Length: 372
Image 1 (tube, rainbow, N blue to C red):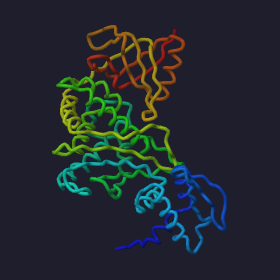
Image 2 (spheres, rainbow, N blue to C red):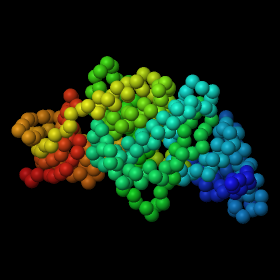
Image 3 (cartoon, one colour):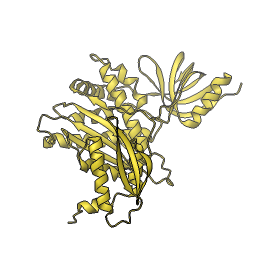
Image 4 (cartoon, rainbow, N blue to C red):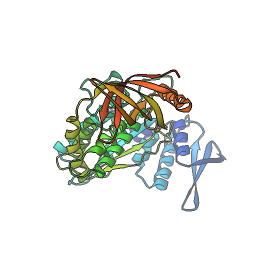
């Protein structure tokens, strides 16, 4: 069994990580002093200074890092061990789930903890599956895409934090030279989008009308995602919160505020999951029409939302509709933008579902622009 002393921990904090962290939290370089760089920030209208060694080869480097940690803990009003952890994680995205069970802070009933961990795994798998495919079914396939499994395999469960009972999922940034089909960052961003959509749908749902969930399937809401969220709440349907923080070395412009689920939302999600599993299977169709509306893709979703009006041709049926929604990959979306400008029609083949308010092409097999 190995033991890492405090000095060993501090020596693992590289200078580049310290500089990255300071820049991301509002500190500024303001000069030099002896063999150190002076960094400053403003706290309650007063300037605070921090000395960062110019090299990690100093014999007292660990002590210098300890001084930095103490100063940051004072400025941020956080425990030193959390500051040290974050300094060592400047290339890590973090997803935290704060549960509020009716037990002493920092604990959770064993059976509820098991459900929560399983729910955390399943919600991430649901988001990874949605991110790995342009299809957005109401029930995810039992056989998950290899790209989704690859993302899950690189995530790790970190040390829990103080406050009720907090589960921490860490996602190290991929090497810049690697270009995976789906990155862990893509998955976490889509998870925030889907969880927010599920929360909003639950807030707007009353009785047994689950149309709000049906209309958010394209945002990543599925029966699997709802079931996973319910599992995190446990049998007692305890309130929980999802929060996201992004690697200081690679910040994102996406707005990802905290997502909270209370007992009413959890109860609604449980019923919504059953409803989504009972939706009729989508039908194969060909749609020919003109694009009437385009929406830029969200930062959390690489798919662009497009609306068209035209003719739906299915088995033994043909009908005209003025609101048919679909989500296109970046290449298809670029074609749609060009088509919208010149008024040409498009032909789309795929699977169609009806939410009660609109028709949506949930799986696109072919998208092409027709000649004049």
